[in-house]
Length: 289
Image 1: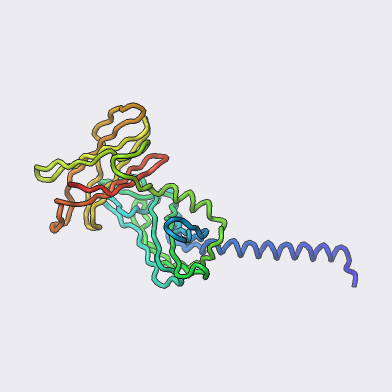
Image 2: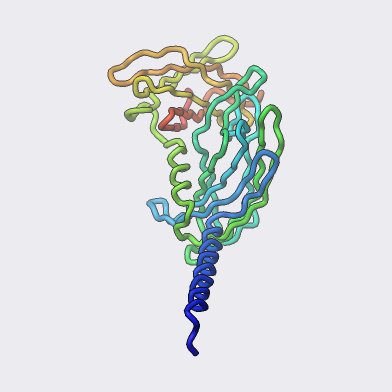
């Protein structure tokens, strides 16, 4: 049977549209549907399988999108706020999930203190170890987070996404988010943004801590400090001196060692220090003797 040319043309167009729709469905599998809440939404993003000295791992991410002017929080929210929570129970063919935290920003909490977190949107990169790398994995997440503007709203999402390990449309977004995760560095070494020293001065009502950070000249730096347990509520370090040193500037920050639970042992502790500049972020676990 010979098809009329017009019919043949319509058939070709129909097939093309079907193929396009199929491609869009396949692309949609790179991310879960958005689960919306007032002033925000969240979804999961799938990435590629990678191999490194640490073994084979899957790249993925949790994206939170917020309305203009609204924010959510870092793992340590500062003087006020609630950090996001991640519960991966119910996932299939997954041995472990590591949540990575991109560098946050500091802002007023509206009550005379400071909060630490994210405005607009943020992607928390995930590094996932599968039980069997030859099989697909199902990532299931119960997410809790706060959506805050002039007031705060509790938010949550129940998200699922199949992980094939193939490179998807959102891979570049995940890579960009990973670049904003603070790099682990040694204390007292490195060039550019680096930690030079941490020193405790004992005495008075509370011990006093001095931290020195080196950074390229003219680059603003924020310092964040976390205690050795989640119930430590250390204050935001204050910048006290800027002194030029060759091609870099030595920044000095200070804070008092208070905001600890009564049972805390302060004689031999390790603090987590995070230094954030516009183009870089570093992190160190620093013993405080």
